[in-house]
Length: 87
Length: 300
Image (cartoon, rainbow over all chains, first blue to last red; front, top):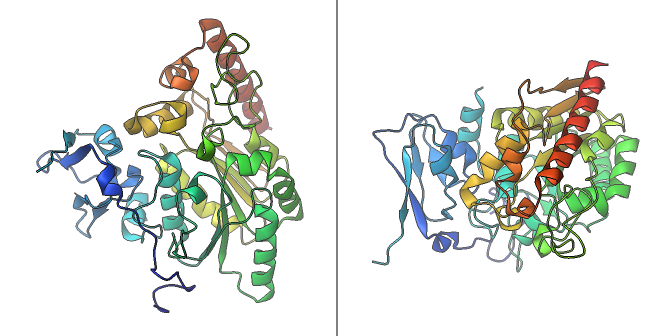
């Protein structure tokens, strides 16, 4: 623990909410249209979109709140919003 | 390094799930600021949206992976003055001392301590995320709420039509303190914002630095959650929120030669939906006047 954080953290560590459960629409990335520019990662308020060293970007759904900024800001419209369904 | 590579490679120091609203501009700015600042940072967040969203911790848990304090609404700058003086005395000038405060804690309640710290030239970076109101408690008016805004304390009805006063223009007030660095930034111009935060951190090693960030609020302002960046972009393009920086008295203004009409921005926001064409013309006049003043200052 002492290596991971500069100051001691609380009993449970980091406070996290299950914000993924807020979502009614989820963003889906269409890889054939994606040019890997990275603008979706830059504008994601939750930090759900991550890129690897080959500049391939992916959406993580665990904390995505479904705000839709990535879909609107994508210059090639490679992200679409799909309604969440209860399986 | 390219700013996209910088953001991609740097670690997100904020908790993955915090209770900021969908499409929150302040959450976006906080994450990007801390990605630029890095781990060697001490942050102070006064009461406001970001503190309420759990960034300062909840039930003995931390909301950040770095040290974070919650001072009172009115003593953020004086609190950090003490922290930074301690670090200078311990010979640790490498530590970034940053405040991330809302507009209420900057322009209203915290103004006295902020102005004092700026005048003394304390070595810290003060960032204000301006969502034009006390959003955390339900959009009460603040002194940076723009003229005509509908807020919960300036409602639209028979007696009044939203806020009747013009906003206090905080970045210019701070520039007149003659501090090391003052800048305005918008999340829509992310490269510019990353550069300004980098410069602000460097300037905070020599003296006081202040950055004013435009932070759209979907819940309070009444726009769709996916329009956050578009609102910020239109605010910059219409000169409603001019981007400038003052580095040791040297002005640099991003001048739009052909600004879009301010009505393009106001029509997006439900807080301005009651405005008549006359009101919009009045706001346009205020925006143009302010831009003229900034042009004169930057040319001087």
